Length: 365
Image (cartoon, rainbow, N blue to C red; front, side, top):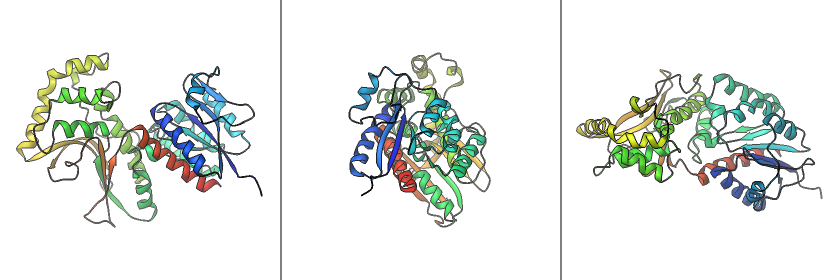
């Protein structure tokens, strides 16, 4: 009986998503003994584990072993050299949000290294990088999947790809694409009750870990703009970058120059009135305000910002930090295809990454 096929796994990034992915990888390796999954390289920004002869790194307590490693990570170009020379198929799992790692995707793919990642940067950066990534994959036969770059573990990208590839015409995509913004507006402007002050809700969201360390990184709308850029491109619009369309920032102009997130939060209460007026205007019309993104393929318009919705609308009725994405297509008519659920969190994001790895394994063995 021949030995089971082997697939080498390389992991860059062992933070919240990285740790959750490692746990899921252990489960996957135990549940699916073929192909044999071998961890060949793992690194953070400061530490690395790898063996010159590609011998396996034990998955048990690997984050502790990594933390104690005397080895520094290889330069990114050297990582690709190391992986491309491996004696079996390699999948690189990029669990970072690094632009530098994303820039090297075309090189890795052209040398036969498949990629799965939640990193938005490669798919929402310049349109040229987007083209280079997929043309490199096509020419080499390597795979690239990035389900978790939009909606964490929700099947947003795979659903859109299926719609497009089976010949449906997507006319509009609309939704709440940020768990942070979902939580903020569901608390600030609930469909029932008053809601809290805007600055209090932002502070609460930060204390619960929903926002970035500096909440301005959520409130500037760029995270949502990146996700819309990815979906617009998959729907056939050659969007140049996340700054190529209107993106409404919720950072008061006067606070853009704050030197830290803490200073920003300290000064934010002085601007609560602006958001109160926005909320009151919506209430007067019998509606609620939400932070949404939309893509209109006919007019080729993409935008991110505040919109008013009837209280009965699915977007208004969201709870907690859930995401909701509606696909309007010719096939589905006036009733959109709706995907809804947790759109943030280490475990669900890692689930999307692990699901992508399973897709790659199905194609390469």
